[in-house]
Image (cartoon, rainbow, N blue to C red):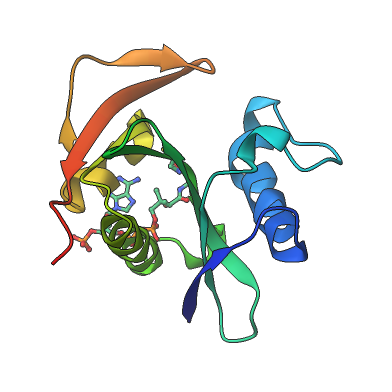
Length: 147
Ligand SMILES: CC(C)(COP(=O)(O)OP(=O)(O)OC[C@H]1O[C@@H](n2cnc3c(N)ncnc32)[C@H](O)[C@@H]1OP(=O)(O)O)[C@@H](O)C(=O)NCCC(=O)NCCS
């Protein structure tokens, strides 16, 4: 397996969008259709690939301010879930973001996935809320400063 940061608008980005469509967006009725989402142009995309270079997981980072970033649309292909792949991808994204000078990460975790973020060091920040008709928790992690 290999982790990588990918570039907006390239074929790998489209592969990541298909993964997000299949496992995150189509089930709730909001698939991306045929265009790259323009609002993602300046956001880093981190992916993990299997041994044949297929993208099997991705996560997108949106900068909130100089030191804080929000991770969103984290997904691992169903076939690879619960095998430690999500943890590897998240660790990679956190390290890259730390090296880029970010200090705090927030996520809006789907309630069903909150256990994954707890296991990877995120703390609940506030009460449950609804987003896209799904219960979520805001969660936060300090990644400190790059050495
Ligand atoms: C949530 C998700 C990204 C986790 O990735 P993963 O590769 O399955 O997770 P890992 O195998 O790396 O798990 C790391 C740890 O978290 C735990 N974990 C994983 N998913 C969990 C869940 N949904 N609830 C509770 N714990 C979970 C694992 O048991 C493991 O614990 P351990 O270290 O004690 O063994 C993945 O399951 C997924 O894509 N789910 C569907 C989409 C989704 O809900 N995305 C999140 C949107 S906020």
